[in-house]
Each structure stands twice: as structure tokens, then as C-alpha cells.
Amino acid sequence: MNWNAGIKAGAISVLFAVLFTYLASLLFETEDLYWAIIAVTFASFFSGFFSAQKQP
Image 1 (tube, one colour):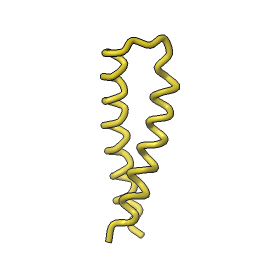
Image 2 (cartoon, helix red, strand yellow):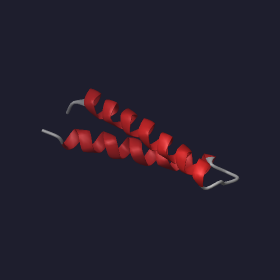
Image 3 (tube, rainbow, N blue to C red):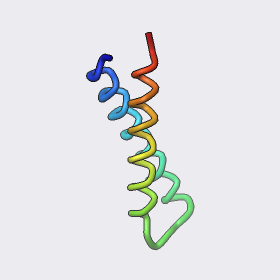
Image 4 (cartoon, rainbow, N blue to C red):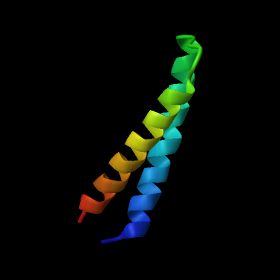
């Protein structure tokens, strides 16, 4: 397993997901954005991490 590739893919995924979540919050105003950012961060990191681990 290449852990560096998984961590890099997870970090890139987190950056894009948090950016898109923030931009969506500007369009659709909400009082509490923290729960969405936390959920998106965990989901996108692990999705990017495990998808990079499955690559040959």
C-alpha cells in the first residue's frame, strides 16, 4: 500500500469539498455551517484516501 498517495488524495479531496461547501453556503444562507463542514471533511478525506489505495 502506498500511504502517501492515499493521504495526498484525501487532502486534495478535503480542500475541494470544503471550498464547494463554503460556496454553497454563500448561495443558500444557513445559521450553522460547522456541522456541514465537519461531515464533508470526514467523508471526502476517507473517500479520497480509500480510492487512492485501490489504484494499481
